[in-house]
Length: 143
Image 1 (cartoon, rainbow, N blue to C red):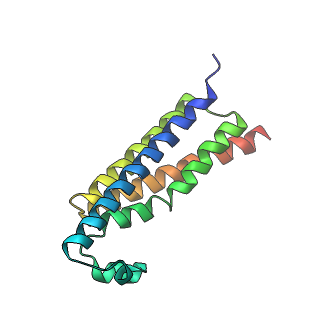
Image 2: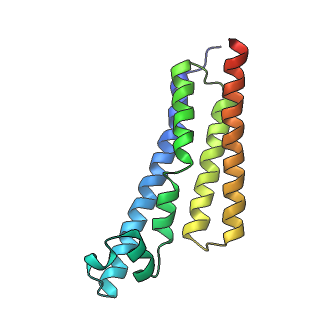
């Protein structure tokens, strides 16, 4: 049975939804804090100023994280699609990665226990390494 290759886009869409949710939360928290503390926007013109002036930067920090390692996930998904290599296994790995990134965001924005967050990050980074290694090996074996 031939697998629908476009299914690999659904985990990408899920990551996009996560980014949009974190963006909305970041903006809401930032605007609320700036209004309640009467912070002029120019006082937080740089990331250094934001870190110094704002008390709650967890959503903003997580937002930045979503544009670091996950970029390699997006490329991996698009490579699978372009090469027509989407399989149930790869699709499952993609959804597992999305679940870990959602959990990472939940911990980061929520109770923010650093070791919990780090362990989830390490697991997601390891999974991403496995995903890429598997793809490269598959390509090498195919010639």
